[in-house]
Image (tube, rainbow, N blue to C red; front, side, top):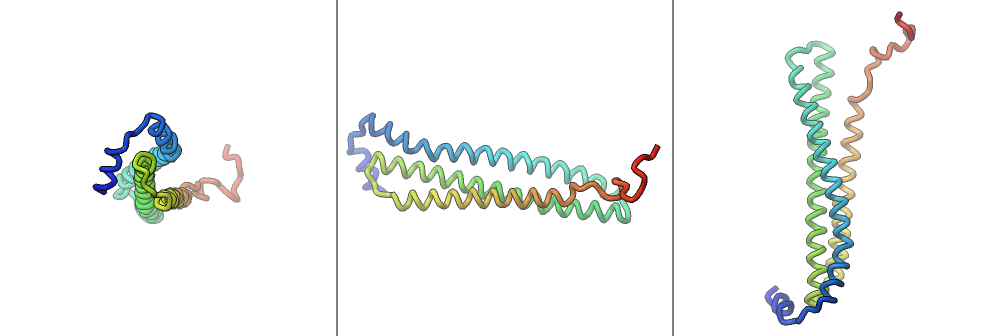
Length: 165
């Protein structure tokens, strides 16, 4: 690392070189924007899940029988959704950190003439894998959320007259 720093300091860096490096590093920076948007979506979703869980917890003591069983089932699913969404956030943040490392390596290549092509390819693939895992967690959380979003059959009045009045 010391040799790399000495190489950077001893080499006269021209403006054209810096501009070229910035252009190269800009491409993965767009990936950071996408990851930021994903993380914003995930944290918003987590906030709504937590709010829903608090609302449901307030009803715990007031319910009995089948209604209580449905409430407990929903609370368990909300707990699972919080866990899965937390993992999606973790994987999204990890992907963003890997992209930042990749951008740093691109600067080292451009300014210090260090050969890091394989390392950059590896970090890019790792970032994509982490991002895909975050999206997979999100997809699973959406699947979990639909398990309790159905309208119960007794409210749909199947088999009864459509009109009540």
